[in-house]
Each structure stands twice: as C-alpha cells, then as structure tokens.
Length: 50
Image (cartoon, rainbow, N blue to C red):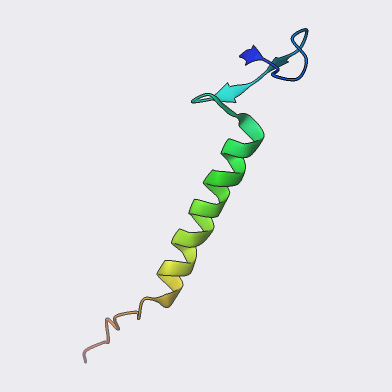
C-alpha cells in the first residue's frame, strides 16, 4: 500500500511498486504471449503401434 501520487489522502494497492491494475495487465500479456508461442510450436505426434 502506497500513497496515491495524485491524492495524498488516498492509498493505492501496489505490487513491486506498480499499481495492481497495471501489474495484472502486464501478467495477462505475458500469459497470452506464452499461449501464442505454444500454439506456434509444432506438435510431436506420439503415433500408435499395433
């Protein structure tokens, strides 16, 4: 919890000195990029044997 830079009478919830809303947006973008990267990788077929 830190003081709001625009209004000292209010507090802002932060993670690593970053407002929590911005932190969640950053984490969501990282998550989406990871999913896109997984989708681009070719899947290896396990095949099946008789």
